[in-house]
Image (cartoon, rainbow, N blue to C red):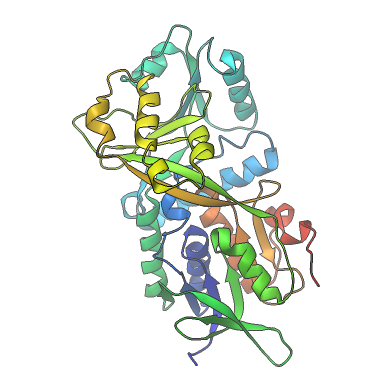
Length: 385
């Protein structure tokens, strides 16, 4: 049996890695396991937009995401933006009188965000055009730039986190699959079983993305169902070319929720809510239609796009995000199971570093974090027998 550790963390995405790093920084012996490659799941297949802009229906949840953004400021100060792949200079949201929601909708969104102290700049057509010269903004176009929003190269960030964990004496095992849980004579959790051997641990953190509910049920040793559903996300990556077509994260006045951002090498990443819904669970051949669909839609806003040159080399990523029934994070001890801590959220890119920091503090100190109070697993009805 391998030497015991203070904490075994299940999941090599941003949530698990950030939690493991914070535990290691607190002087704890940590082993993290990931069944695939680091960032091989949701983290590596994310649009990777760091924001609180989209959280406009709940002020407290908006504030949590804004705090998550501030955590990136601290991390970038420690490591450097380039080292963690932090990029971008705001997200652009716009429409026109005939667009979805009209200008009244975009003005209302800006009113809400400004009322909550979120930094943004309102823009008319001239201001929009100055930021994105390739986009054809029609007469009457209005929008705003959410100034603090960023995006990140999630895979680069994940590998930097893993390197820091190792430097602090922690262990990262990938690929390494969890096959069960160790239990002591009192049937309490005492670590994890893996396909590379057992790992005794005082605490187990489950941050396994869409597998979190299954892992939690396995740890509980009974019928336990957390209301986590798997929400697919299709992304089209367009490689660098002779022109840089977009400069910011852009949400376009498109009924299907089309959005695009630049990549660090001058290419683009494109997503659309309706493409997600249409292609979810379909075959690879169906997914192969996504580049043409996404780029043709984008060309209605950027008429100069050379579609023939861009469609062929474009590639597709399909990610699956864990989303609770109330669309909010899950963070806290697993009810009725001592020594197991759960973390799950579909906003892992924005919230990962903050949730990891708060979770580690709770595990080390035993003191609950006020910010996490609304997001405990215990808020759900747990079915067990």
